Image: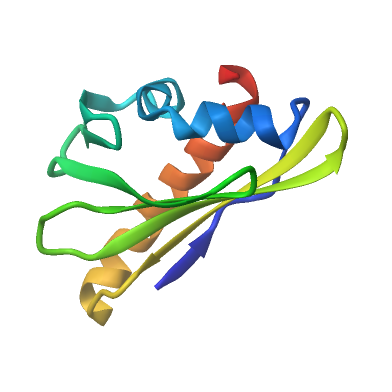
Length: 131
């Protein structure tokens, strides 16, 4: 399953956006209102839970400054990635798009498609306000 957030314009350079997203603790500022738990587990890993959902641990898997950060599931039964793609539009602004990829059976994909789409859209739209 592949999902994409809308492309978000940010009035910051790609380096500023990248540096913000590279700091795991900053993801707390991007989380939706229905978050019930957020905990930094290390330099490259955090745990979060949304109300009514199981806890999820994300870990930095790949970092390509200043254009890409890949977070992946750390443990658990489900393997997925959340990829932040950062593109320079000019010296002082950039575009950010979040991609979610995961290998789910058709029933699971059907159940989680809408909540995951809303989640990545919330994360992406929170970036300009948080930086």
